[in-house]
Length: 137
Image (cartoon, helix red, strand yellow):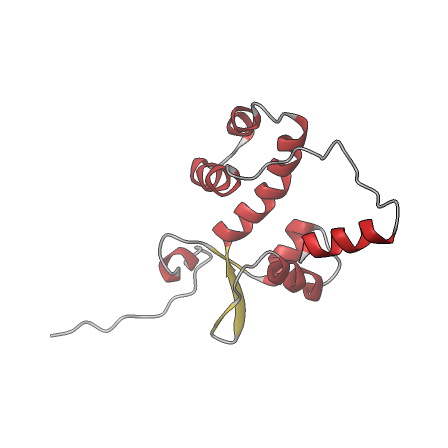
């Protein structure tokens, strides 16, 4: 015989029972707070700009928190790459809070170079302009 479950009110947080698994989710409202921006629309634009997909779950917009963490850390690490071009990875590993996010950010940015060009080419005449246009296309 099946027992009937009784509903009782509780102050216990049961959100973990209904999570989608190992990946946490974040709402645009929460993201707006984290990014310290004024509106949810700004947070949604930030998600779009960073290529983070927005999902609908029960009429609610959500994004994967892991992707948000990677995007935020990438902005920070790009600054480290400019300041410490030879050992930015070690510097980032010292301050990273999540090792998985750290590994992914390093993997994604490893091939990128952040050295600024030292020479600026300025065309002297119209034929130089034509040559530059030809080389750009």
